[in-house]
Picture 1 (cartoon, rainbow, N blue to C red):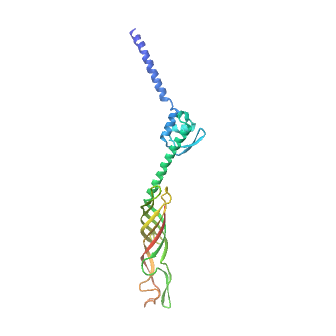
Picture 2 (picture 1 turned 30 degrees about the vertical axis):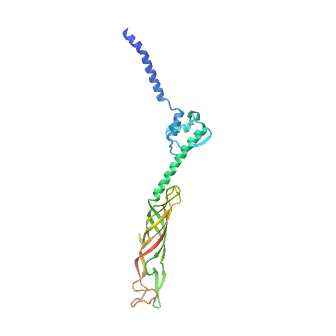
Picture 3 (picture 1 turned 45 degrees about the vertical axis):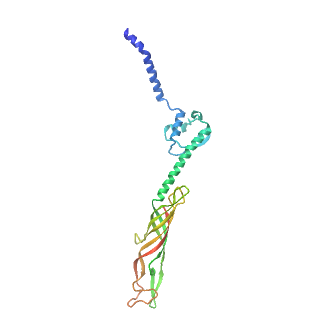
Length: 268
């Protein structure tokens, strides 16, 4: 009799516990509401890409997360203005504001990276024009006419192509407050079919980039250039002078020679 009384008195408490456990289980398995899903999607504001969404026949652009709830919201169009408690104009304004803010942040990031690359070490392909700084012409060919040395072909101004590298420092900012013009040192080399390095130049270069979101640009540099193999008249032989005693031809020799160069370069 005592045991039955205890069980009878405990029965209401057991029912309360069972009902509470059932409510907790049902709440845990209940899927988030449309409003909760929308809040989560809008709060995260990140997607693998920007997508176009049609909501109540209104085309809008919204950046969302790759969260499955967000995908579900878009896929089944569970988002409703009523669930969010917003009017259509307020919702459109909120979505477009979020998309605009993210696009602005992405643009700023691209411009920051372009500036860092522009001011770093860069490669360029340059077209150069060089001239000699030392006396005596560069002789391509010479001959002796009636005992007088004549130069048949010479090349004191030399066009060439350089592969160059440079390091720029900020010289002038653009409208967005980032470096669009820089200056600094450069080194360039010219190769030939016979030599890996036929000539080397170094000096000062000024560079510009026209696009705020692109680090590529162009530059103008000036400096000395050293040619490793320059052909000139041999020792003791002068142009437009008789051959020295004992010489029978207009003898040539090869030497290194300094010059000055002006370089127009495109960076890549």
